[in-house]
Image (tube, rainbow, N blue to C red; front, top):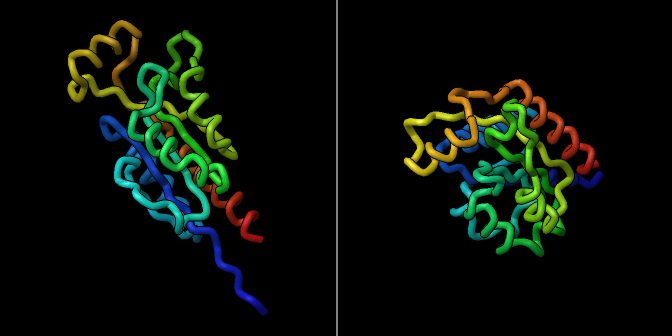
Length: 171
């Protein structure tokens, strides 16, 4: 009986202040716990994706846009990403209830280039002391609330759903 090679996954992230990196780490830990062969790298440090069968890509969202390093990663690897399985997640305060609707208009176009199987938006964390003066001003004007709003159970559950999806693709 021939043994089939299971999918090798890269969790790639872009984070300005560390919140999205922590989410990416939780996702890769959950994938590995489910028996998935997974690596993790920062978007700006990825030079070759040819050894991966699929990707979980995540970025923090500022002013409705993914980080520049993630947008550059997608542009540089668009053709290959389009041919592989991928899941995407966004982390930002747009997920925090402020009474204003989320605006995915800017995040959306970058994902249309690669057609992820799923895209999930997670609430983020706001620590004003870690922000630049400009970022603090924007957060204040936008009515952002200080605190950590990440739902770790939701994040881990989504990662387990991805693991199930990967296992179904392996069969």
